[in-house]
Length: 309
Ligand code: R5P
Image 1 (cartoon, protein in one colour):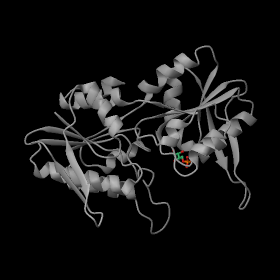
Image 2: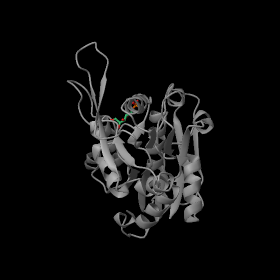
Image 3: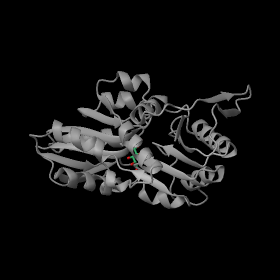
C-alpha cells in the first residue's frame, strides 16, 4: 500500500500514516508562475494499491485540481488501484438543481474524479447519502458516530440528553445518533412566515431542562447552528452543545460561534483547522485518523467496512 497526501490536510494524512505505520510517499506538488499546478510522485507506484488523501476543502477549486492532477499522475505511473480519500467532499451541497439553469456540481465533481482515473472513493458523512450514486465506481461513506458517541456518553453520562437536528434535512443523521445514545430527538423547523419577515425557529420535541446536542454534517457560516442554539435556549434548554463533522467555518464563523449560546462546538479534523479555529476555546477537534486509517486498511485487505460500525 502507498499513502500520499495532497496539500489540503497534511496533519490528518500524517496521523493516518502513523496509525497504519506506513510512511507517506513523497509527492512534489508545485505551481508554475501562471499558477498552473504540477504533481510529480517521487517514488515508484507501479502495481501499487495507492490511497491519495485530500479533502476538497477551502480553497476548494485548488484542492480539487490538485487531486485530479495527482490521480492522473498515478494512473500514468501504472498504479494498480487508486483510491481517492476525501475526508470532506466539497461541492456536496450542490446535489440537485435549485432552480432553472442551475448546475448539479456534486455530480460534475464526481464525473471529474472518475474521469481522472480514480478506481474507488473513500469519504465521510456525505451531505446526502444519495451522492454515492453520482459515482459509477465503488464508494465507501464512513459515518462518524464511532468518534462522537464515546465522548458524548462520557461527557453527559448523568444528564438528560436530547439530540437535535438543526434543520429538517439532517433528521436521518440526528435520529441515528439518538438511537445509538438511547437519547431523545428534537427537530428545528425554520420558517419564514411571510416575505420580508425574519425566520422563525419552531422546535419540534420536548427540550426544556435537557442538555441539547445539535448534530450536523457541515458548519460553514455558523448561521444554522448559532440560530438553532439561540432558539433552544429560548425554549428552556439547560445547555446547548454541537457535534458537527466538517468544520468549514468560513468568514466570520468562528467569531459567531464564540458569541453564540453554544457551550462547545466539537468538529473533526476532516478539514485542517486554521489558527483561528485552533485558538478558539469554544471549538474542539476530534480526530478521525484512526477511523480513516482502519477503513484504508480494510479496503486494502478487501475486508468489510460496514463491520466498523
Ligand atoms: C445544510 O443543509 C447543511 O447540513 C448545514 O446545515 C449547512 O451547510 C450549514 O451552513 P451554515 O453554517 O452556513 O449555516
